[in-house]
Length: 356
Image (cartoon, rainbow, N blue to C red; front, side, top):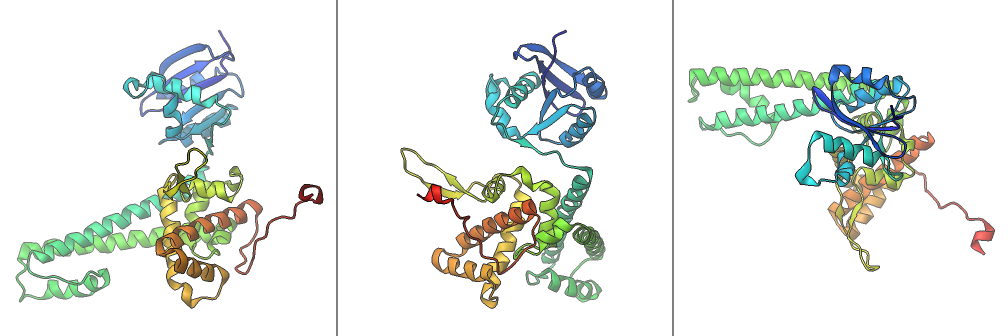
């Protein structure tokens, strides 16, 4: 049997497609394997064999399992794999996808996704659960408003006002709310209270993560980053040294301008919005808070944001501050330093021979 040096795996729920090649890139096997038999098949591979897969649901679990077996498991973004599918969009199937993954993994410039630990994924589950509860609570509040409007009761757009008036409305027998509708609204209000309890539990877990993790504490000290953003970033990224510099980290978050340059002319557009939309949203929201309250603060970051807002406008100032915070965050995490609000960065001095 030919020695397998690289394997591309197309993950699925029950059946995994593998595409294996030797050192010369010749096909050894391209077959479907049952999920329960995949690890047993991997035990036949030589130590250090590269096994590549797309970064999708369950990919981190498989990579951790394969790394324990002494194999070189790596993940790639799906967008980076698509160009290597020889059959194009019209020939998409599991076998072609596995071949494309195997081919993409052989490229020297390919960017791989770091494997998350169990603790990282556990903390990210809390964040995802919190976002889901938030959406459910918003839907529940809107549902209550819609039901009240059916009976001619319209309240201001504030969840606080709705909560304070809802109990009195349900107890008021003089309004036109029917008996069944009154029971429905009571049940919806109970659901709202349950969602608030679930959200409170999630926020407690995030606060505990901030208290226990030194990296989260360093990140939370940055102006515009609170415990929520700091916890999410640390849990998502893990090792910040996988990025060469802060600019690369900001580009990974989608906070850099989109380029459309040709013929020596550089044209920059809006931000790329690539990467994790949840992290980018948190950074943008934190930057908005800093720009809004900047006139009341005298720290260098706030004053810089206010000056930029006066020159370039509100939206550009917010995005620029989010980009700046991402770069500061990388510098603190990669070099294990604490945040200093009054710190002024400077370019390193070049050697005299270079300046001459």
